[in-house]
Amino acid sequence: MKSHLKRKIRLAHLVHVIGPAGKELGILKLIDNLDQEKFEIFIVVIGVIYEGPTINLPDAQVICLNHMGGNSIKLPLKLRKIFTDHRFDIVHTHSWNTLLEGVIAAKLAGIPMIIHQEHGTFPQGSLHCRLQNFFWRRADKMLSVSRELNKKLAAKTGFPLENIQAILNGVDDEKFYPDDRLRQNFREKFGLSDQDFIIGTVGRMATVKNHAMLLRAAAKLLDQGLSLKIVIAGFPTNETDIAVLARELKIEAHVHLIGYQADINMILNGFDIFALTSFSEGCSNVIQEAMFAEKAIIATNVGGNPELINDQQTGLLVASDDDTQLAKAIHHLKENQTYRERLAKNARNHAIKTFTLLKMVRNYEQVYTSKNF
Image (cartoon, rainbow, N blue to C red; front, side, top):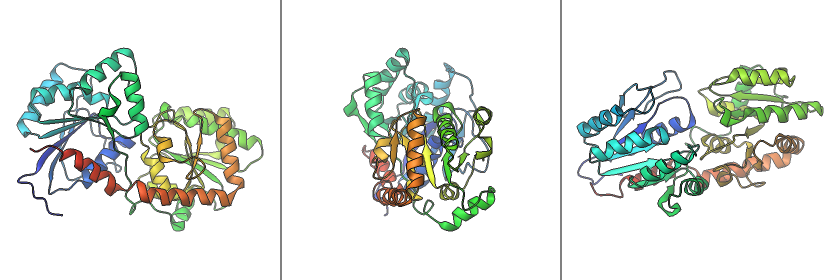
């Protein structure tokens, strides 16, 4: 559709870093799919851009400050100059690491529209909460990625719940889909057989992802005589800790740490069950991607996960850090193929109706165009 605007809206996304994590990749996905006839898009990076084949910057102008220190009085002044020089109409800040400096700089620069967004985990100390409440109120729009996160943000900080708008993440159905050939490719690539029953997960190896819960559940099932493999794909932040735990549990022969993988659809297709055991989530991109890939999903009942998964209809929800409950859920799905396949089909059908990339992008565009510039 042709734009009737007299000029493009100059939109800047302010991020802390760009790297191979769900939040950052989700922001890039949004930027890459915005209407280029309506928006002139900039990415302002406070820290660094991590190089690698996983980072594909969209068609946007990138400004990187390479600032890796903590809070600095000079940083808002640097940002103000950038914002003023480029005459941005909108500055969209993301999460705590861009909030204070970003909002201060945008106010100093007289930016017409300031948007702040939270994506999941956020600081919850009393001082942090007071500061967040104060600076969120200085933004023109406050966004999050799930209604459950809205409730948590409001409850912890005292910010009005009705002033937070949730926009759920979306998935490109041309990139995530079920394919038996990809299942075979995955298993051949990583030395796994077609008979192996694989419980897999995708996510950076950070404490918040709680991969240890999955390993403890696997140990219980292996002790019971079940045959299974665990595959963890993700940026190796604390890979050593996971490997050590696998050895301590004496299940290292059943655990495969395959590092970050660019072709996530192939990885998901290789799994029999997708598991996400995080302590905290906003709106999990990878749960949505697993739904599009038609996987049976087990996830912890935290954050926005229950907004994505209808328990026992499109997946299973288990209590946070409860490896006994997780083990029972895995056992039930392993022994009930018909039920497992029904959950997987239900998940894909629901995702196609609800979590498309086009729907997500249109929701953001409505926010960006809600003010006349």
